[in-house]
Image (cartoon, rainbow, N blue to C red):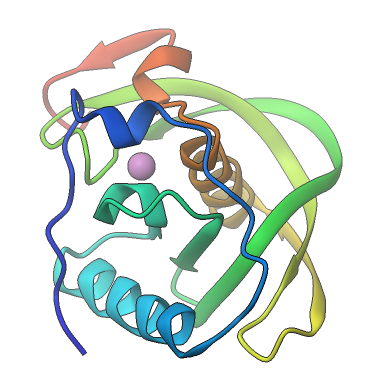
Length: 152
Ligand code: CO
């Protein structure tokens, strides 16, 4: 396992639409391992592959309830909006108020290539939407209604 360099806002890879994974091979499993290690080392709640310079639809999240590894994640249902504070490892030292769905259902593949359905509310719902945004080249600062330099 290895800790990867986290790309910062301004890096072109963060603005690209990422490609779906077509085959879950050793390279993808290694990417998942390294992304998890990088996320934990940076004390993050989630990390998307473009943030480590890989334009593929792969995310990892740990909202405190264990590691989720999701490949080709898609939001299939969503309900009610709520505002909350977000930050991002690619935009260090910046926080913002972002409106997100309070509950989402996401379908994805796990590292075994099995289809999984994740229902998230609260922080998990927010993290899922934030990380899936990364796969579409969107940063939270583009959605934020207000931006802070310190965590409120
Ligand atoms: Co982020």
